[in-house]
Length: 347
Image 1 (cartoon, helix red, strand yellow):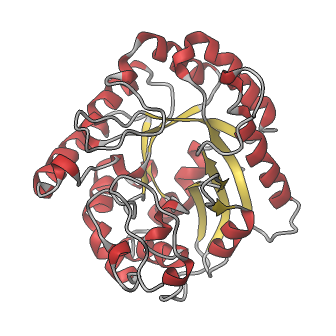
Image 2 (cartoon, rainbow, N blue to C red; image 1 turned 180 degrees about the horizontal axis):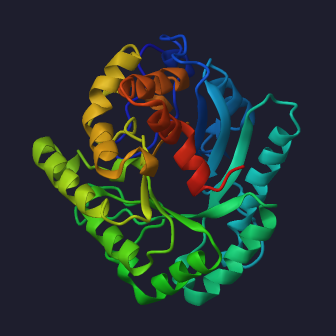
Image 3 (cartoon, rainbow, N blue to C red; image 1 turned 60 degrees about the vertical axis):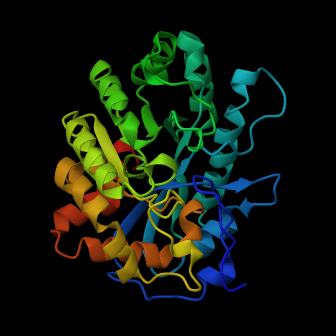
């Protein structure tokens, strides 16, 4: 297959390994330690499979990946039991993978060293019981939850998988659930769309002692009603990010730009991009985040296998390294491992 199938914008698509393999690069700065703070593992009913062997195939491409953080993707929920407790199965699954990796039998990297799962915060204060069950199932590796709140008034924009209503982050009961995170020393990963960044800022103000991680540079939308308005969207996104950066409890993941969100069409081309091409394309977004938040509050992420529709794993990390070629050693440490270690409390 010369060109991967085209996704509907806003959706994920299984990567085409043959297409990705058309371009390979030797790793730049191969000794630099990297903690990948955002990847998924799954075996889905539609036939999509990305498990530990697949992750190892990607991470063993020349870069020094020392640890990873598993992020919620609705994998391996329990089939039985109370509905609100079924997501505990995902933590059990990720912890099992982490135990396999910790045996040393799969190399030096420690996969799933941190685990971020899901709990329904609409349970209010009862969410604490779910979070405590996650902590027990994680065997010391559970770090927090992700709650996707992506919503837009346009019917052309796909809502995130929780099918949230508008304004969810301001809902009183939802915030009662959110309050349990800080009380248990847990973090919150936010996956939303750029028009909602102000709502996240209000949440960060209300819970200044809870670590909030903004995924995928804030989810800029470039399709549907935002198509053809990229300059205006970028300006609005940057303004919102500047306001959000005033909240010291918020950090940003630098990645997710390979998803089909209407900005880049690399996945439509006959051959995958080089790291130079990715760096040039991603520079305005990533450069702005680092400028606003500082290296100590930013971390590069792979978002694999979702972003694998756009490039290979090794090529992506080369692009990140090209983007930071002028950074100091201290800044590089923060961006590639230090911020992730601190936020997710990794050894």
